[in-house]
Amino acid sequence: MTTNEATTYPQSPRTKVNRRPDRIGYDVAAVHAVLDEGLVCHVGYPNQGAPLVLPTLYVRVGEDLYLHGSTGAGLMRFPDETLPICVTVTLTDGLVMARSWFNHSVNYRCVVVRGDATLVTDPDEKMAALTALVEHVALGRAADSRPPNRRELAATAVLRLPLREVSLKVRSGSSKDDDEDLGLPFWAGVIPVETVFGPPEPDSDLPVPGYVRDYRR
Amino acid sequence: MTTNEATTYPQSPRTKVNRRPDRIGYDVAAVHAVLDEGLVCHVGYPNQGAPLVLPTLYVRVGEDLYLHGSTGAGLMRFPDETLPICVTVTLTDGLVMARSWFNHSVNYRCVVVRGDATLVTDPDEKMAALTALVEHVALGRAADSRPPNRRELAATAVLRLPLREVSLKVRSGSSKDDDEDLGLPFWAGVIPVETVFGPPEPDSDLPVPGYVRDYRR
Image 1 (cartoon, rainbow over the protein chains, first blue to last red):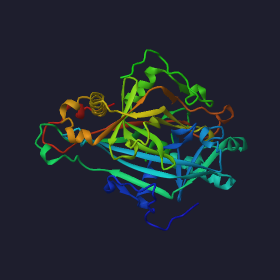
Image 2 (image 1 turned 45 degrees about the vertical axis):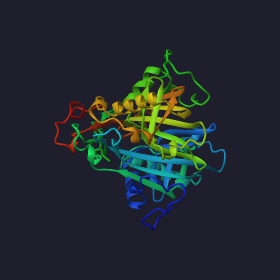
Image 3 (image 1 turned 120 degrees about the vertical axis):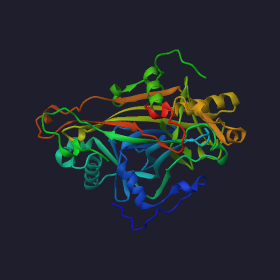
Image 4 (image 1 turned 60 degrees about the vertical axis):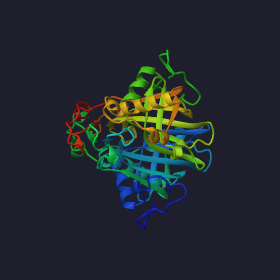
């Protein structure tokens, strides 16, 4: 596990932005908060000569992201020792309705992580990553379900992407209109967007565990 | 606008999958339904030698997707006439808790569109795409806010990606456990995931329009 004593990620030529610098941040705690709240990332990687973007689960452990998949999955077939990927986690918080089309926007928090992924070969690190993945989906679930056997472990690949080239983009708050538009006869404001969970749909007669009944993130 | 008389998208070497073919489809109506329900896509494109994945709004018009952005945005700076991109729209429907870690899963619907994007240069097509974008965010909003002026139009770029290489991946329903795991003392089932909207946060004294008050998608 990589650790990080710094409070901000360094800017790299690939994470620095020229547009809307007011919306970009590199704060380690804020990045962790988004990564820990999110559930599904979108990972981009080179495939047949062009980028391919797929959704998948992920988890942060210290200063590393872990993704898993079938050993037969395209993402896990590393043609070289490292694979240049981009992992993006987006939380959508609101639809911003301005008086002009142009100033319409979306409130969101988005972490972009770029870098070279490597396959995890150490069995202990792989098992720790899979445990963390299950716990990321539902805290308490790893101890309340069956861990992988040897066959299942062999069929599962895990990749690691260090949190080195990282940026956080945030838009929040109310609509922002040009002064000359404020008198237009159009409503303006924000429609909040939220992800909600449950009630659970059981495939079992056992009592519903607390971490399922009260699921939130 | 490209139209499509076929009921399924043809499989291409880049949209055919070898794993879990039971979860993959090419049905035009099902693809349209996901694209029309979704709000934010993740677009992947080559940037500084590696894929970059960013969230952005999009809209489907017939058999084309349109994305917009500032003319200064990286995605809109086409080094060549076409840009190889991937647009992915994911709707997360549930967390699937199986008795084994290995059989945990996510219920989702995901459309992946690959292809060569081009910048829209025709002013009528550009204006139609922007109108559709506003209407995709909130049906009825285009007529209830100020359209772009010449300066705003000049600052906005729109790209088109035809729906040619398209696939839809779906996982739905209950948890699927191995038979020998069914007796394990672990709860199994699905936690539904839903996106909810509102109540609106006004930045205006005008009455809240119906399409905002009753917002859903």
